[in-house]
Length: 74
Image (tube, rainbow, N blue to C red):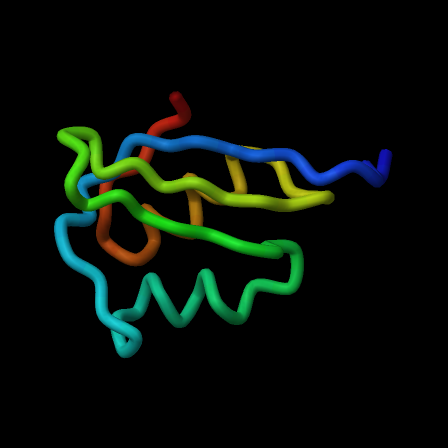
């Protein structure tokens, strides 16, 4: 079922630095179902926040782990 209201998904990661050329940044920037995203590298859990209207947490976890990083939903 397609959702219409934006939702915020929050994940714990091991992403300690981010650059515009990083594989994970490219994947998040180009994913058609991700409206906005950010990673708080100052937080001990390196929190990834995703704003989306139609994606499930498992899809984000898979995308991040395929890029060689740890990711779990908070």
